[in-house]
Image 1 (tube, rainbow, N blue to C red):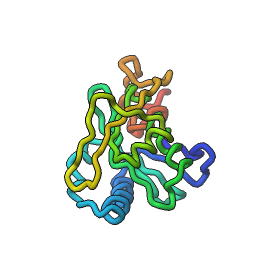
Image 2 (cartoon, rainbow, N blue to C red):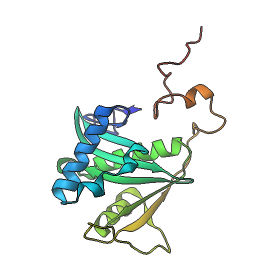
Image 3 (cartoon, rainbow, N blue to C red):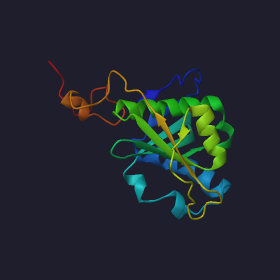
Length: 190
């Protein structure tokens, strides 16, 4: 699914990563933000979870400028490794990108998103994106990170076209995020 309008940002688009090139773009953005800017070790930023996750890549025209990794658990999705290149860190880009991710998560039938952030970024998640702190969970420290992290949650409404057990089987075989478009191997109706 490609959102070319991005709510007034004509040069921006979000895509679900479905190609190796897109994954490389996402990893490049993460490298710039986490390895170069924050001096984190590669082993903290790239782990085995990259192969079990859904990745979102944000482009400004053809240039990768942001990324989010989404992992799926029993009754929630988790946003991780969210990063935007410096020139693209503004409320409009972040909100539009987050809405794309929220829409994707809700379409898959999940009503809850959690994330973990340092206090500065937790404030951004709360004020800009409507997350709230998870009650009863103490902040925690990850090795190699200078600050403690807090857990945040956002509840999502389900859309009318949620993917569930009543969804047509052919839709379930379509490419992630492109559920409204016939797949390349889908039998054409005569």
